[in-house]
Image (tube, rainbow, N blue to C red):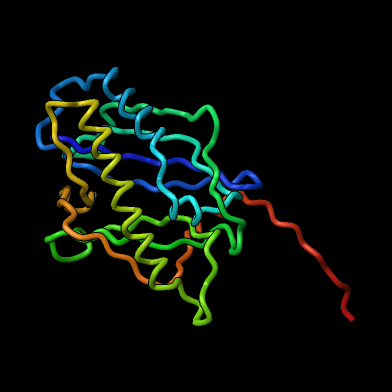
Length: 214
């Protein structure tokens, strides 16, 4: 038994990096050996997918998509079975001017029919290029554009995997390393409150100003 972990890799002005990491569960197994040629084709195809108008607006022109990583992992112990990394020749930058801090994100919540934390997942998409409304929230229309855009983007990743492995069907899923389960996603939802992805500040250098006291 196995599952596929896809990472969309990105960069930000100043040298910072970011990523989202959806999981896909295959309906049929890869076998003892994963076809590396097919896995490489899947990674290249996923890296080439455009996330669409709204998601590109959201990341702003200060951030870019740089490539994709596709991992096949063992369902029993989450060990790595195969990996492929595709780097875009030219990073795909967003399309809007940045308005918010680089760690600002909107969250796509993944819901399954499995109750509890093991049946829920979250994808943090950068939301640097979208202004908050007067209530300091993301507008209803923008949230709708976000969740529908994310659905389309994830479906395109699924299609790329199926094209590379035509005998295997894939389902968007949530991976729980606690219960070693991979329940399938039945609903995608998003709220209007901006969140933060703190790890995006891991390598972002900070400049300080000071003043003497007294």
